[in-house]
Amino acid sequence: MGTPPGGVLSRAPAGEPLRWPLTRCVPLPVSSPGRLARATLDQEINVPKSRVRDKRVYTPPPRSAKAKVSPRWLVPTMIGCLVAGLAWIALFYITGQSLPLPALGPWNLAIGFGFIIAGLGLATRWR
Image (cartoon, rainbow, N blue to C red; front, top):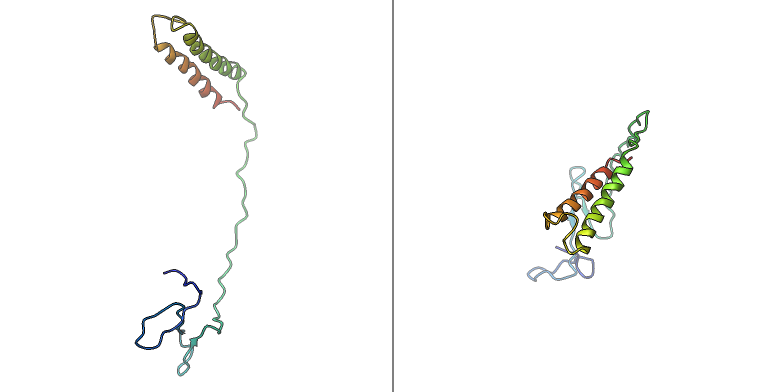
């Protein structure tokens, strides 16, 4: 049930259907015997404040003493695989599928993409 257009609820006389704005008294718990607690729209209801929890201070995990470094062969091999794959596929299309290996036919594309995938796999290990 959403908020009414006026934002206020009103109480209809007995026997009539409820219409917007609809207002009514909200019963509150009785704080002591013989004392009836009711809130009207202009009264303020006191609500106890929640306890504030202590937040732990974030401590980052300790770093390893030695920084990881890629082997010297990784970057040249990665770039070589990427360029070789691109060149293989480009040569296959430019020569009208007669080069690099005419006996393989469309499998030349698989070889070119294989080189590219190998280059991307090496790129994930580069630090």
